[in-house]
Length: 304
Image 1 (tube, rainbow, N blue to C red):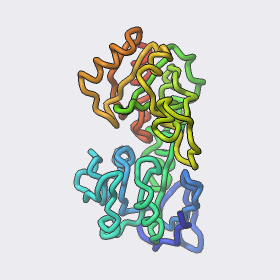
Image 2 (image 1 turned 180 degrees about the horizontal axis):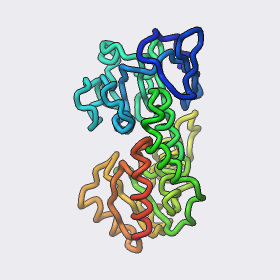
Image 3 (image 1 turned 90 degrees about the vertical axis):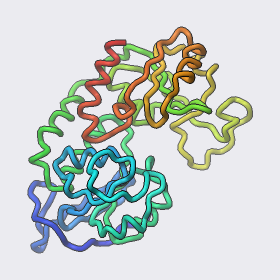
Image 4 (image 1 turned 60 degrees about the vertical axis):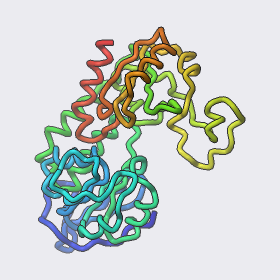
């Protein structure tokens, strides 16, 4: 994506070490998770969030009134205008709102829309957290960008406290299924897998890479070159799942809503494992949600 141009100066004067006054103008420079340099000349006041977990974080940081645009999947900031879904962002609808900041995610949002938005003069932070601690670091970064570090101090302090000690030794071998037909899971290089590791569970598919094409993933042909595509979410067979002999098969309720007959089929295919439904947000929502989600996951793992 192209480097973003200098935005216009708007908003109130911020406080905190993240912001400095340069030639009489509050200024901050930082990198997003794609390594792009972003420069702001005032804390954003008109924000479009293209990620439900980020919309939640903005409200948790006390900046919900700054959210002027959101996706149809965002349950927070309901007064904000809807600008499509996470995969079908309406770029024209975003631009019509005249935002001074956009928050997106490389994994959740479709690339064409992000590339079009990157061509504008609107600063856009694109995130891609892959570790549980990154979720807390992300919400702390948002607090600094918004100039609300002091108000968010308790939230970020509680978040960082979750990682002051090394993660507990794995108590369980877990397989997490995130899709059906074909079955899909995740390897260790994902936020969800690291959340489980931080909660004391080992991912039985930690080193499994996604293969291309689909038939290669399912063991029916030799893999082809992945050509730089994402290999973190492999597609597996029920037999492969059973061969891993997990203690628990975890079925989060998003991104896929599991039906009772599908759950029963998995239980029959892996009879030695306990099949457990859980809240998908606790695995995949980074940011402010992470702060309360990780203790819940630790309780879940302990209970199993």
